[in-house]
Length: 133
Image (cartoon, rainbow, N blue to C red; front, side):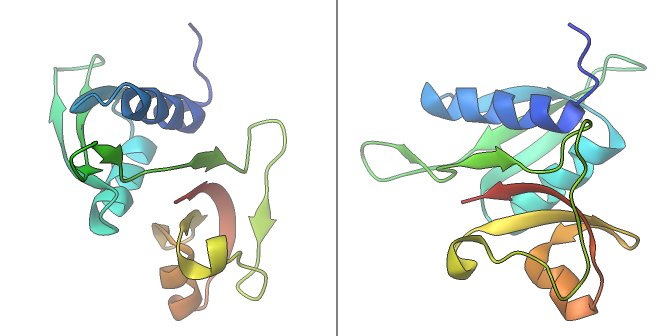
């Protein structure tokens, strides 16, 4: 499979793993997926992630989080916003608020990958990668 959209691939893998309540999922390791995983971890959507494998075949093993005795996934929705065919950019004034601040938007800015909240605080805009809640 030619996954030229590594972000959509990553979101889909996490979404599918959550649906079947898997403890972990593997995501191909790129600089972008590493940064997104870091943001998800800081925001408490995933437990942890580690890099395994060597050379070209590196993977991030992402530990998913569930709550309650029914093991409801912490991540309810992952939504890709900016796609390779249609990029979505917002300046700092236009940054989206996801579910009135309950969810996060992951923004790719000139100062790295961060949440909409962090980007607003730093006064930077960028490419809106995805929404998560």
